[in-house]
Length: 143
Image (cartoon, rainbow, N blue to C red; front, side):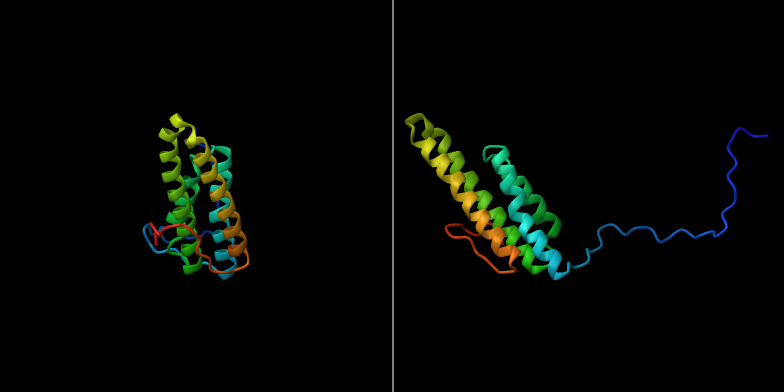
């Protein structure tokens, strides 16, 4: 007798399925899923930005953009806008650090965070309503 456990035979033997295909294009999203992910592309970086004092908001935008940019035009545009908001906010925050030596940087740092907060909230509401939106004062670094 062997030391290996004996399993009862299966009544319905199933052949193994096809192996997963890596690198295959992902299935397109439904309109509702596109609206949800477009909204989340603004909400996730907003939360990350608030939790990290403005320094990690771009991570959420970048992840959503990279994962969902090819799954639908609506989510692509909103996630690209979210990433653009985070890029311009990051640039202003970097400029604010040396300006803190002359105390102006504290003002510009706060204004950049408030700007990003307001624009992300407006964009999340627009995305949830299914509306296309281009944020103001935000260059299109990512299209």
